[in-house]
Image 1 (tube, rainbow, N blue to C red):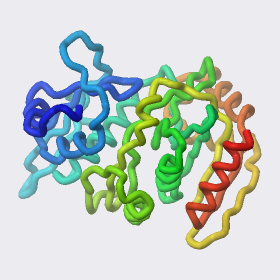
Image 2: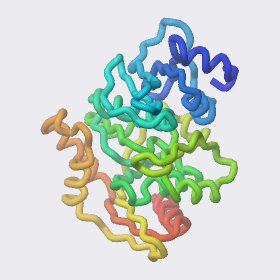
Image 3: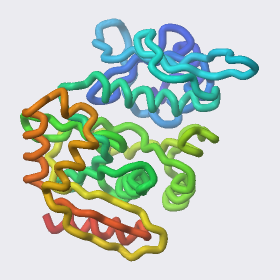
Image 4: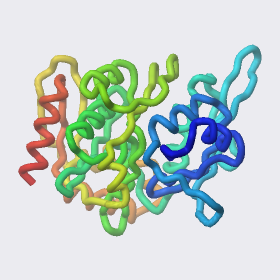
Length: 299
């Protein structure tokens, strides 16, 4: 997409849209809102732009402006359906990212989808399931910057038959203080538009690494399930998580395990049985990264 001039990108988005290959999906995106074009140029410059009409498109999405009382807002659409309450006009690009996540978790039931960051090193995958405010995305971004391959910042796509995780690498969503923490660690990292005063605070997305995109068609097998928790100035603490507890937590973090029924539960059980499961509390990113790197090298 890098070869598409800014004016041409904006014109296409305002018309029939563009079709981006976002492995393992293809999405047609439309929006006349300038910040959406800015975000796509900043965060998806190396993604493949599919031209012509001979491509199957999984999702047709749009972010459109609306006038509401005395202010402008934006709405997210998927096939003309608007599943969410309108957001502030300045949140349009973040809304696109959140909406694309919703499309996958709501309709892609080939996989069991788990709310988790997912990274790989030396052919082995770590899942980082954690609630908001736990430092998951900050840790995920820092691991990617230290050489881990990003499979996803938001969801693990677990194949219930093979037990492998399918990559779906898209920009890492960072919030509030985490944005500056990662900027300081990687001044040359690419960031998209900043959305302020959202329900999540200040939000910005960071571009994925070239290796993560280049290897987006390579599934990998889970080896660790780690439940991270950031605690300011706390020493690094690693405790083993009982597998039964890890299974319950993963099931509660799955968007669609119930759709797969018994087979889905058994697939999660096999995942946990094949992984080392830990709780990780950290106050310093470098200490946490060193621990993860040691696990990868020892494997």
